[in-house]
Figure (tube, rainbow, N blue to C red):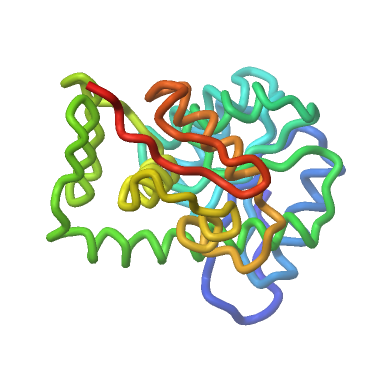
Length: 239
């Protein structure tokens, strides 16, 4: 199913992966109204194939899918080609979100959701891709952040812990680097949203929380300190 845009805008192609026909159609129609092109896949396996052929700018991925679940589909799509993924989950369970982010997703939304909020999240992710290109360019000559057992290389976008490379999603890397550039300094959730996601409001603060939990899972719980009611701080490992 392919919907073409109805008004002129920056050409964008969005792959919508949802097995509930009514919701899939509604999302696709809203994306089309935004001036983007929407392609719908109803299961994880066909989504992986569609992503290879279509090379979308963004993927909206339901977790609970037939044939292949959304987590496995996300892993395969992101492994084949970096692309922002927004996952949809029917459960407001933090573990589901952390697992989804660990699979390579960049953001999540819990059903039911408003179409207005969905489009806002999509626009933010697309802006973030462009912002990431600028960040990568500016980081080419940045010095390695060496904290002993934890080393962050902004130019190569590589993180090693105890000599072993740690796989981070692009969003996780940017979040970690942003915090690590100011060790022990507290950055508010709103500041992190602005720096990493390029969001201008605080509607996504829970997204920050979930990404922090994903980083802690990969790097250790003491790597990022929570300042309750304020934000987070990077804590260099103690040797």
